[in-house]
Length: 372
Length: 127
Image 1 (cartoon, rainbow over the protein chains, first blue to last red):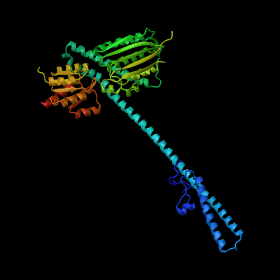
Image 2 (image 1 turned 90 degrees about the vertical axis):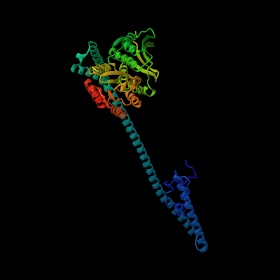
Image 3 (image 1 turned 180 degrees about the horizontal axis):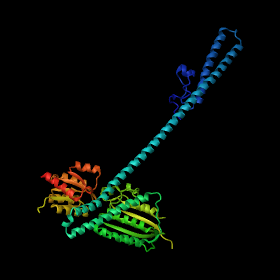
Image 4 (image 1 turned 60 degrees about the vertical axis):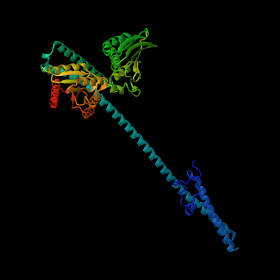
């Protein structure tokens, strides 16, 4: 409610009543607030009516004195009646105008409200479109960053293979020792293996993107042995990087689960490869334990970790931690995406990560055990 | 055969180091290598190479930083640096050229004999 001393609001039906004698002649509106002008208007009319009545009573009294005794009481009564009738009709007609004004004002208000609502809607939609455009722009940027890195990754092994073959074609091999020749052949072989794995990652990720992607998770797997085997396969790379890589069973089992051996091999391989890639000193621990009806694998490292702001989206496609990109290490941003998609296809399984930037990360895989 | 020139190859992939080392050796050059920024600056100062081939995506490091460091050092700033990488982002190319690289060569687009020829041309130009 507005303050009583506040100025009359212009635009209010009551105040705009041009028929109001007070408003018209004295430029004075007797209202203090007029959102509810219905009541106030009546008040105004009453004043108007009162003043006109008083003036007429005085005039008739003066006339009565002037023509003393010549006018009958009837004449006075009829003057009063006239005034009352005049007042009544004046009131009626003014009320109509005021009501019309009021209706107009109400319509105007409604239109303004509607306009405001429309403006809000347009604003909201504009914001929505802008958000979508921003998101798209971000995706495009991510894609272009991915392409930069992916093309570098594809080109590096290709350029070694191509360079070696070019030297062979140009007759350089004949000038080389047997050891050098063997080194070149081994180098080409290793590079083609790497090339295959990158292409494989890209193909698997694209396949996983299709709506009808599904995994037959029906192999019976002894998860502890499975993990130990994978750890052993990465032992050589760890030794080369001078990083300790260990496998530990934290409980006695059982660890039998149902899953796709082919895809789970890729999941664990990706986790261990990532740990090795982003750890430059310290150790990597792969552990397995029981937790109620589940088996939980944890791969922890003392690597670069994942920044807090990247943790939520780290399993998205083409996403790499900011520090991982700055580190200029190879990485397609597909490994964790593949892990998430594979785990989603294993009923009751999940993957999550805990990380401290600069200190290391721990990735967890949880699988429901086969009930015996 | 006298050694034509000493080249420093800043690269972290051993297979590539071996490939270009063999090729440059066959062509009469001495190609030495460095794997990171600290090593690069140290070797450049002690070995004083005639030309540097620099990769951009080094393990945990950006070749652009190495380029900046070498160009900021009075003793190494006049050694011609050819960026020799598979990373072909336009922004990086412009950055490298503005920092004073003499050329930006994409590895996968040239065979070893072509980079040897490019190096030979650049060195001839300088002499």
